[in-house]
Length: 102
Image 1 (cartoon, rainbow, N blue to C red):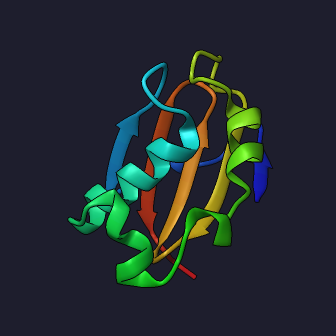
Image 2: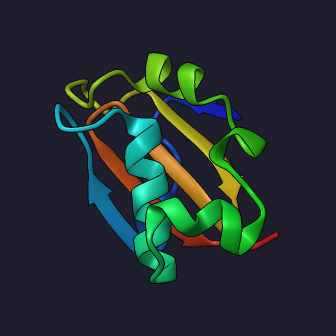
Image 3: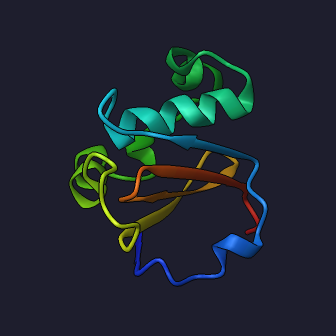
């Protein structure tokens, strides 16, 4: 898990999928939902379909603690790899999903 001050060149990259999160669900749940939407599968099917959970990539509780409920200024961001994607979540409530360029 990489912390960021939000000053990366992410804005110049085009994401595969973007989603906002906030009061309706914590960031960890919203990430799973966003990746599932990018894959075109039900969020509950990710573990069965891909044999992976979010916990394999990042600690969901730590993610939720770091980015809060999405009402921040966007200066805190967490980036990690999940399935075939690079996921970036910031404290302003934005999830951006990129193709894994590794």
